[in-house]
Image (cartoon, rainbow, N blue to C red):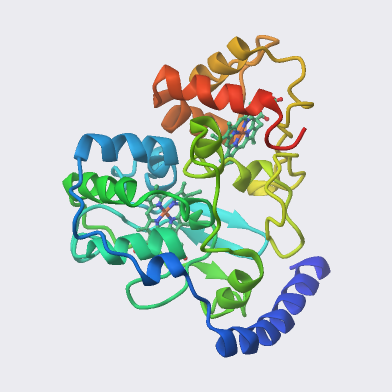
Length: 294
Ligand code: HEC
Ligand code: HEC
């Protein structure tokens, strides 16, 4: 471990303790989750599959490069703090999420809290999903319920202490997670980018504790796996036309004819490339309009 990582961990520990007290005193509260009532809604499995495309669930929960089963998890995420593994989210009731209620599922998605009341790490982008609509969550759950159950135990995370303790996430969440974040929902492109599409998780800059303080898409020199992620504000994209962007989001080809690489390949394969033309057009318009950082 480098001194830099140790310093960060020490800083996080101190913060976790300080913020921990504050959180215990004030409570980390989501108004939305507290008053959640999904009982009157009916899920549509086809819509749910489409919602999964808008959110890229399959890319992170299917270990495709190692021949893993659909949504059975096991994808490794390497971070400066250790390795996390995505869980099995098939309908298997023992090793997957088959016996979760709709409310338990929605609470995980909106507040990053498990049925046991434990806090998830933000490698699971609930920080972006928290704005998803009730109907989207109900549809998503209906679709997940139809996914073939696969019995596969999720590997344990291998994280440095104190992050290995999930309670440390309470401090992180108190600092960097607003469960009641509100976004414009009238602009479909902006909604997809800032909500389910979770573009900011990679394209916004993060502070030393891994928090996204400002969701402007200015790029991140140290993105996933330590790779740099380019800025995609309107000025970064000044040489792109609307058509360039639509084509890029569909097949990953850049205006100069090169293909995009790294993590963006997965985003295109499992998310933007599977969306309707209208949705890709809306995302392209939003990015080029300068509404999210110019
Ligand atoms: C960027 C990668 C990534 C994406 C995209 C992603 N997840 Fe996850 N997900 C994870 C990781 C990593 C965890 C484990 C978090 C932890 O253990 O704290 C997780 C945890 C979960 C859990 C908790 C499961 C359990 O057993 O406790 C559920 C449910 C879930 N994800 C569903 C989804 C759904 C539905 C989508 C799409 C809307 C999605 N995820 C998209 C990485 C991702
Ligand atoms: C898991 C991380 C990740 C997510 C999520 C992500 N991107 Fe990317 N994106 C990247 C990386 C990495 C690159 C650079 C790829 C390369 O080096 O070829 C990139 C490149 C791009 C580019 C090309 C920029 C350029 O100048 O070359 C665009 C446009 C883009 N992403 C748009 C988006 C949009 C829109 C979203 C949300 C729907 C999104 N990305 C979500 C990681 C991500």
